[in-house]
Image (tube, rainbow, N blue to C red):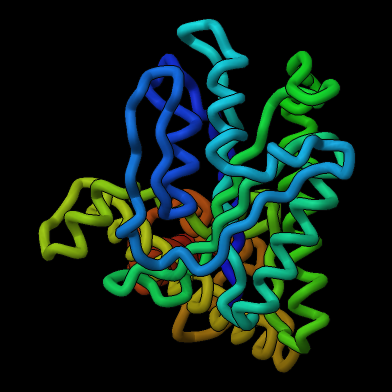
Length: 316
């Protein structure tokens, strides 16, 4: 199953981050920040499979140099709370080959960002050897200012609009699915939330890099516990849904044979309207994520309506 991820953050000076440090880490190289004099050396970092800088045709040649590019970004920003770059993390389909993943991210970055005037610094990372071996992903650092002459011009505020981010998210899903189809893979991704897709599954909480590192070292983290609990609730929700569907199928089958009878295992000759009310209660149980066993609810239905049937016979 292909995994969808389009995570967007801002590299902000107020958070103690720098564009030069971010670029050095993602490209596994050494960069020196000429503004502060700090050197960032990640040249020993492993797992960086591909790097390249994509720029508009009218961009000056020097912007193809990673050190000069991000130092120019740092110097262009004067404020201590300046927004320096847009930082994207995108999951790449493990169903594709490395070469196909390079073509995918290059094509998408070119159409979505470079064509609008941004410079995209792309780095493809391999899955961590201690983690999920399907976690192929790309980091994309984007400039936030327009190009003017031989340097940077004013910032483009439209690139920060929520509607623009949503368009990029949808565009990434379309690009991934297009390349999966081109490669003959049946897997597809969907950028919409689970609720937007009409699914009752509970979203799993994000674990984060610190908790992930703890879990890999054999330590239990709060985030890891929350994630495991969500997975367990989803398994229970799926079991409830499957059993409810089985009960509904049994009800329909016996109703076809005897229109006024319901499954004997479920209840004792209760009306179809009463049984429908209990089915509705069960559906609400699934929606709320309550894990009370189906058998208990069905048994309670049988007892309650059995007593009601007895009272009705006495009145007759």
